[in-house]
Length: 148
Image (cartoon, rainbow, N blue to C red; front, top):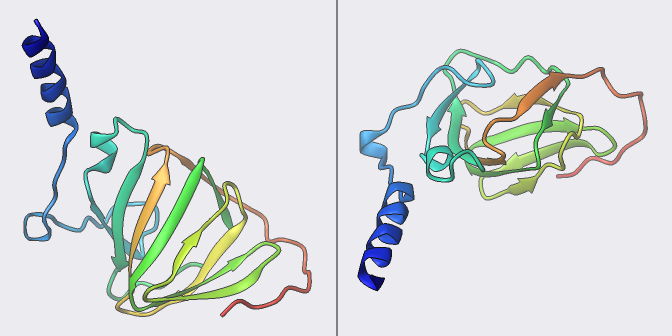
């Protein structure tokens, strides 16, 4: 009996265990922003929608729109793997993220991307996997310090 239970538990774990290799993966042009390409890392499926993880990279010839927006999620963090990206956050100001920078965006913080390098590549993890993004009005002008 204990063996059968262990086997079933192992099978459940095996169904949730995921590995993705760069050589067998591809970047998709569809995603939240048309100026990026996204490589799904299989986390959404492995966690049954509790979170999503993907690598994001600049799409050649495309530039950010600079539109203010918010993400309706519980948690979101990004680690810059290569290049740089400049964001602006409500109440914070402009922030330059470079290779090696890790940043956590509080849920529903109003923000926008201003620009990025042609070689930017980032790892992004968001919970839950299915979250909504809404356009937002530009925040009222307020003195804020620049983070560098």
